[in-house]
Structures are given as structure tokens and as C-alpha cells.
Length: 209
Image (cartoon, rainbow, N blue to C red; front, side, top):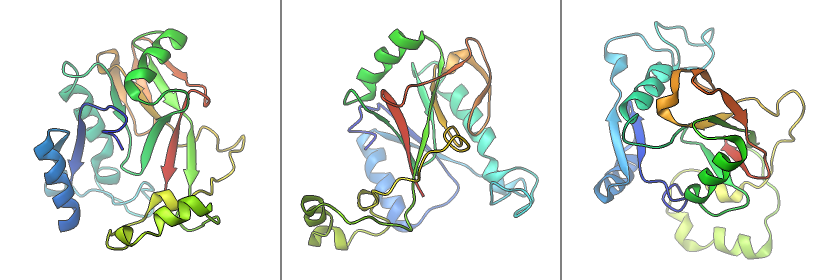
């Protein structure tokens, strides 16, 4: 999907993965799209395995996610015009254009350059399904999909209702890495030109969990 959206490179901070996932990573690494960065922080620190410290205490929160994001910003600071900081189950999708290469000039024109662009979270739970349209059902239930492991996110169309309390929860960002000084899991804490919300009619984040 990242390749279809016109992304030049995907950096994955890998602590571990299944053999099936490793084959996928090897394939896209060979194509030049993916760069796998071994994330071995658990060899040196007791890492928390949950985003809630009370459920999984440790020396550092949630697999060292914030240090990984900081490393990503500085690692690609002079290689990438923009960096997107997001999880593997999240996808920032343009609504009015087809690719990120078309989206970014649109964001610069509307909100200004060298900003941190924040995208609203839209949650699609994988434990609930709506009836699929006939055309989509035929595609998703085709024999070719049956041997593919994992959750088929295309089958989950039910979106959790956005409310005033949760509409901006768990957002993610696309930012110019040279304009950022400090980041967190869901936000840029300190940057040169600040952050701005992107209108959901322009682009939004799809979160399948």
C-alpha cells in the first residue's frame, strides 16, 4: 500500500517477527522499498511490552518506541523531505488525490511549508464486521486469499464512531524532519514551525486494530 501511495522508502524498526513476515521484509528490501533497522534495545534494557506502564512495567516504555521515532527523524533528516511516523496498522490515506506525492504540495499550499501535519484517527476494529457489498465479497472471498495468513483489513468496513472525546485520539503525523527537535508517540513536542490539523476531507488516518 505504501508503494501504491508513492512512498520512496519504508523504514521498519524490527525487534522480532515471524518467518512469514521476514520473507515479506526480504522481498521488499530486495526491491529497495524497505530498510529494516534491527531494534535490539531489549538486549540492554528491560522494555515494557504495553503502552500502559501499569500493565507491563520496564526501564523504557513500549519497546522503546520514542527512541525509535527519534532515531528515525535523525537518521533520515537529510535523506527525506518528509517523514511519516506511524505504526504498522495505521495508514494515512489522501481523500482528494491518489498519492502522497500529490498530497504533500496540497498540504504545503493550504497549511504552509515545514510544518508538522497531524491526521485524525479513524478506527476500524477487526473484531466486528459489516455485510460486504456483493462485488467486494466476491473479491475478498476468492480462493487466492485463503492461503494468506493474518487479518484481511479489506473485509473490515465498520468504523468506530468519531466523537468529541476520541476524534483526535491517537493521531499520527507527517513532518519535515529538519524542523523537529523532539517527538513523542503521537505528537511532535518541539518543532520549528509547530503543528496543524489536516482537514479530514483532505486526508485522514485509517487505524485497523
